[in-house]
Image 1 (cartoon, helix red, strand yellow):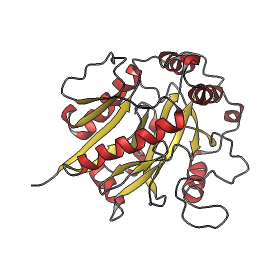
Image 2: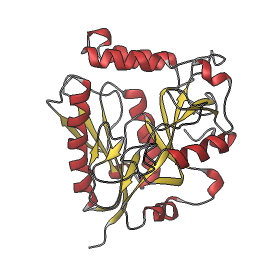
Image 3: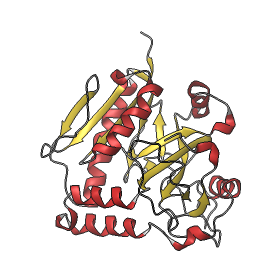
Length: 289
């Protein structure tokens, strides 16, 4: 029996806003809600989102310490993605606040874009961490696309992630890498991470997850990420084509040995900051998300 073309898989905890955006974005790409798969982390909450027609599973017993949680979810979601691969030719797997687009400049569609996986069976999208800049003082209108309302970000090694498979693969470490697979960067996929696109949304997300009552490992990580909002480095952006070229060249290589990296490595460019290479997001992406 021929496989169906494509599905998308995510997991979510206290995240109704981005879950709705994830459904709205990926539903048409995968050909309908019946090809969306949502894993709800914990039975202590319910998303305020219409999940009709979507395959939904509640996952219990995820640890509430960050590193252990990352390891647990990597294993749990890898198993689900690999099972789905038996039914679908391609399986998209990503966090609920991450959205992969095809660069409009390529002029290609999803079937043609997936040809880039080749015999390897996976590809890493170039990551852009969208961050509210100091000049962007108006809160995001949640009824409108974020890109365009927010125009600043970082081309980031940490958000350049393996997002799609069509052969057996296992994610590790917060889904930033695949086990026993070197980094292979895409020439046309871009992953936009939107968790920091609006300070109000980011703070509300942290509060919904327990705020400072969470384990210290989560509190510290989320606080550090909130501090990246309005980062001073955004005042001196690198042109997108240059930053993109740097990322494609340097993220997949171990800096000391020039060997293929197991996970994307930070750029050695002196303009690189902890969050990545500061950029302005080109107008061709505005309105996509």
